[in-house]
Length: 238
Image 1 (cartoon, rainbow, N blue to C red):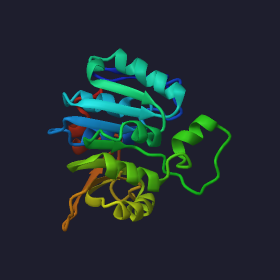
Image 2: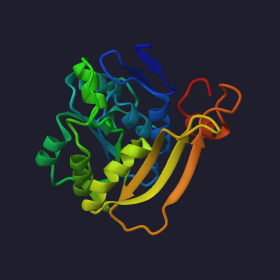
Image 3: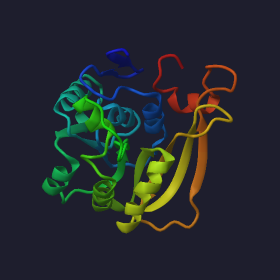
Image 4: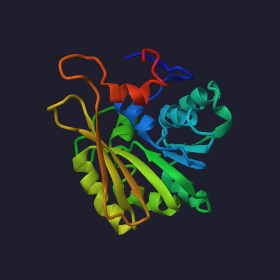
């Protein structure tokens, strides 16, 4: 795994972060609609990847919250060395502490690639555990925070496996969040989807929009045209 990842308009250093740049995270950020965004909250900023990808497409103010000090420092470095440093502000704390300190704030767009392993054996790498397991950020806390920070017409975007989304959805309903749309991420045709992009809002929704994005063409490692359409403004090789 390389210690850096070069995009068309910025570079991600990642040697101090447990969770590295992934294809799924890049697709997630590329799919997030920020066409009308004014204020964005990135919960669990990590390397700063999502914030930087969104900053490339919107002039909105972006605030990122990252618990891990090493990841926070690296996200700061990545943001400062990018063309978008003036619109990104990062905070080194839990999202719960951020909520306590800044409960007057609201955001029309919230993005989160949350730690989604729950009730599973954790490994010896403490930093990786924080990034992958939700012991520090339960789905109950996450749904509460989203509901408190989201504007009445705002949207929250989450990247989750289908089974973990069902678990999150129980708490989302308790806090008045309604699923608006679901996009399946499919590795190849005839392969099961292991991740999805889920969009929530405080507005009730009768008809949930559904879509799917297949990453690779069936018999090769060539990206599909749909995938290329989302990532062509970011990936050097597209």
